[in-house]
Image (cartoon, rainbow, N blue to C red; front, side):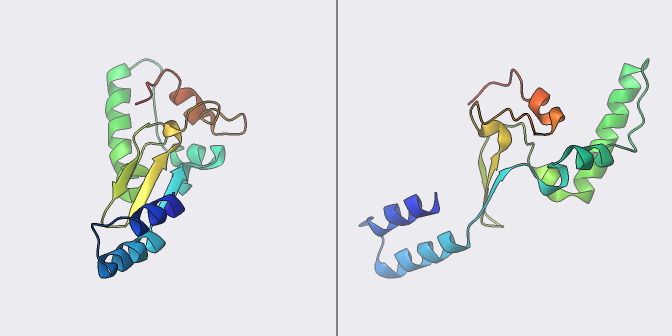
Length: 131
């Protein structure tokens, strides 16, 4: 991706040399994140993340409230996990961090499902429309 963008910028006639140099410098520093946040890239990490979430088999609404509160707690503890849902198909750019995030859900099959992957993400992305 970086090579393709560098080639594109090098051949643009609308940029002067100084502008091209600045764009190339930014491209060199561009961080590309693909897949999952580090905090949820294994089954053990996902289990640990949700270990304190107490749910009941009989109270749907209370479970929903508890899960909503827990999601906010996770978001405050791990901003990367809060920023992108690995099952999403939306690629985005974080300008303040100069980072492109490509969630696992954006990868088309057969790359989407992995037998060695975290089961929660394999099952969570089934039926999700690709955009």
